[in-house]
Length: 232
Image 1 (cartoon, rainbow, N blue to C red):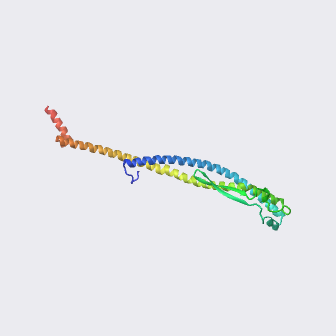
Image 2: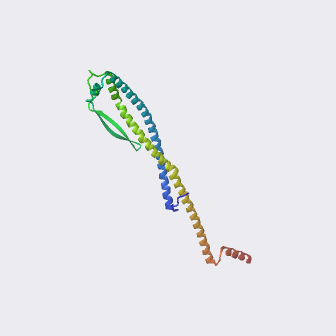
Image 3: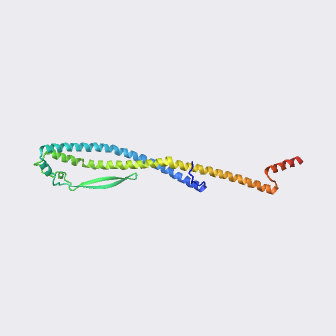
């Protein structure tokens, strides 16, 4: 049923048809956006799965090496080894626009380019297992940043997909059918008004003929014609 506030005028009909055309185009664009977001979201989910498995494997390996290092080293020696780190890591953030979603991107750089600066201790009083643990953590740092970036992108894209899906459903099931129903209602009203106008014009024409020929009604005119035919 058409909305009660709709005015059945030709101007309103033109505006509704224009809005319907815009809504149809917007509906198609939003559906295309939703489908592309879903495709990229699934690619990110697969990438996230691979990265998480790699990072978990690296952290597990680093933990094993730390356990072995603590088994052969005293706690004081282990704490002293990490008191004065030689290397620093600087993290920079950026954003990438993907289908109107600003996905974060992480970039890092170290204070020095020497790979051996990750070891903040001497090798005389430490275990080789500790070296392996530190090396494992250093190796998985890029994957950890990439994993954080990928997971945040998945969260943001999932939110955008849900918003887009709601808009598509609102257009498809509420707004477009309502505008189509209003257009049918106004068209029916305009046709009805046109028929009423034709009937009034015909009535006015009959009244003018009655006044001109002094006939009180259409039936009197027919009776006058029949009488004229009989006299002839």
